[in-house]
Length: 40
Length: 316
Image (cartoon, rainbow over all chains, first blue to last red):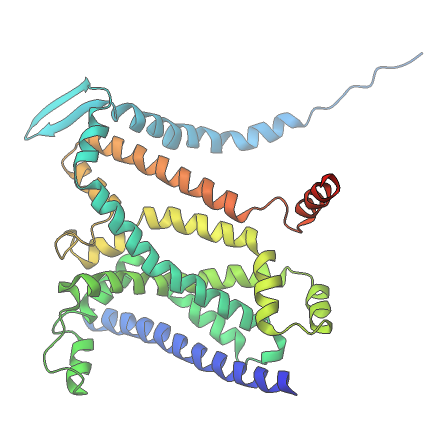
């Protein structure tokens, strides 16, 4: 039971971290794309 | 009467097929490498339109490099590498563990894997240009901070030591953590699932499982990651070069060894550039040797140590 609870919180933490990291990666990729389009 | 069988020798085809590679390697890599070492013992540079040397001067180039700011640039390189590498390996290990742990039930794993690998596809120079534009005093990051009221004046990220070094570290982290995650994930997936099942039956929690099973068993891949990262870190050039416009600003605190080497090559000082290359070669060789020795323990299961202890016990 305890293990299930800890897994649940670990899963939430993992999802939050993944969303933050993915946002950062996508944001910089988007900025690069946007800059390329604007400069063209 | 015995007839002599004619033996067909296929090995010559192997040699023929690998010959082009070795020829190219010899002409374009090995000869320049030996020449670099040779030039490091010569005074050979260009002063205006006059070419001086090559004159043999022994170890003088090595001595004058030690008297120059080389040690400062080496410490800059080390600091920039550490700032990028430590978060990279920690987050990559965490992500790799999460991606292979079925109990966490992570949704959209394929999407996340693709997204975190994306920055690795961008060229370092393009990434550095992007950061240079975004973090400049009138760039979008400062505009956002001002609009949100988080700061009253624009922050000069590229004018401070901490700001510049952090940006270089952040870029190296963002570019390489996806690649490291994929490699570590492959290493963790290579561990036999029986070991994880046994640990679960023995009541291992996730932390014990990670530090006592996963980490020791992925040591060879960790060694590979560390060695390639050390070599890449020592050769750090494009990101700080573009971000600081080749000056290593502020006050040359983000000037790396390869930027220093590049400045010698600009002035056609082949002797000094060769000596610096030899220093770099020796340092990376020593570092890689230590990392290899530290991460490749021959007694990985502890059986040799246990046998030694038992023998000592018998004697005692």
